[in-house]
Image 1 (cartoon, rainbow, N blue to C red):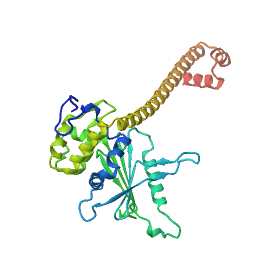
Image 2 (cartoon, rainbow, N blue to C red; image 1 turned 180 degrees about the vertical axis):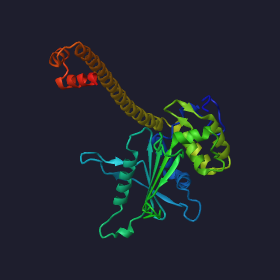
Image 3 (cartoon, rainbow, N blue to C red; image 1 turned 90 degrees about the vertical axis):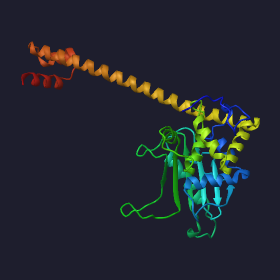
Image 4 (cartoon, rainbow, N blue to C red; image 1 turned 90 degrees about the horizontal axis):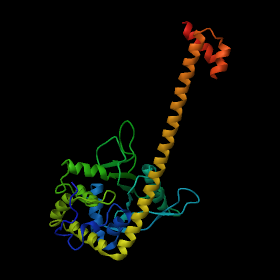
Amino acid sequence: MAGNIEITSRIVKRIPLDRLMDLKVDYAFKQLFGNEPNQEITIVFLNAVLKRTGQDRITGISFTNLEAGGEYAEDKQSRLDLLVVTEKGEWINVEIQFNNQYDMVARSLFYWASVYRNQMRKKMAYRELNPVITVNLMNFNLFHQTDSFHTTFCLYEQEKRFRLTDMMEMHFVEMPKLIRAWKEGKLDPRDDVLARWLLLLGIVDQRNGEIYDDILKELEEIAMKDESLHQAFESWESLSRSPEEIYAYESRLKRILDEEAVVREAELRGEERGEKRGEKKGAEKGEKRTLRKMARYMLSNGIEAEKVAEETGLKLQEVLEIQAETHN
């Protein structure tokens, strides 16, 4: 579905489309959704992900910075991608993962724990702690058990399935599954607000050097009537025109791709070592079969087992076993 990236659209028209930032890169996402001027589109986005439509809708947020403690004693602090507090006191942490770190679930649990624990103050009761919600936007697939691109996890009793607490809620969004659902005609962003906003993140695929023109066209038509989406388009284009923002974005993207290349190189080396080990084991097995065949031939010609073991290098016990098999 990716097409000619030189197409001119009605909203994004002042810069070439191939210069648009990939919003799945954490820097670009945070610059768009983590700024006070764009607070309204952040609220709309979060309500879509959390499926808040009624009285539980988020109506106000405040942005905050929090550094999660290092995973090891000597680690530096790690600043969360996007952390907001709702008007009801809920903490929402949004994390963007462009490449697969192979420990996404553990990382999400770690960040959840960091935010939950960080609320505690001196003389504060446990009942005063507020819920923490984590949202993980992933540029890779994680769960093979489902084709759904959006999965939600909470703590439930195993047999009766009642919820233990509302203090923990985890969302995982798998972007490749979203794009596949779009290509298969299973998504209608006109009626599905979540699909609308997630498809916005999927328009630019920096890893594969593609821009999905069909998604862009569809969302631009919707944006004519969706003020928040229209604002997101304009802010996105503005970011992509700023030399300072472009430099910071490209620096971050380069680092991410370099890290991905290092991981892939390690995988390839591991595969090569595995192939060599396999080749060695195969050769050893072939040699062993040849020696056993030779031993069987020598034994059938009346040569003593001790002599056969000496000539072939096989253990005497193994030669005696071959001899017994031959007699049987």
